[in-house]
Length: 275
Image (cartoon, rainbow, N blue to C red; front, side, top):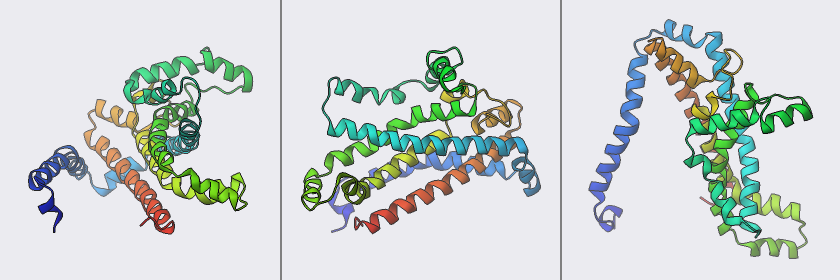
């Protein structure tokens, strides 16, 4: 029997879903594409080939990739700790993970800038210890993106670890596998798709992040200027075509990178026999 006959209200639900996608996703994207068509190919290339535009793309995407990688690593460690080990205050720390979701991004940016500036609580310690300035440098962008991307990884990996049967680990240990072998051959293949999902979410959020980055980045052209800031600058100069061209380019690159990540997830699941 078709699914539409089993589930009541299929047509209204499908209609609402299509209406929502058209209103929230398709119409804005169509407007972005149509606005970009006002430019000729030569004009579009002149905008994209600008050294300032290329530098901002490099800062945004490289920072987002680095931050998402660290978020995937530390997010897995945090999720593993919350799932596998009991400790005092566990519920408090578990709730604290969601703080970046609830905290306004501008507030997060101000707090991070205050903490990591050269005279801040953490920034002063880092400078005095290893001589590296975090705030108002590209590394500050990475720190801010790790802060807002970490919860995506934790909340994606945590349910998978909760459903993972520890009896499989005990069986591997009884067959002579050490802890490293058990992790690499049993645990990692099962949680890797979830880690890639968390990585993709953290990367997608990091590429387009504005509020939490703008206060700690320094916003120096060619050094620490992110693409969203450059788009805002174009809009303030009434260069709407240039802003939409940069936004469309950012959308295409982000889509291609996320497509590659999704294909990698599909390949891993197929290899593990989950499809």
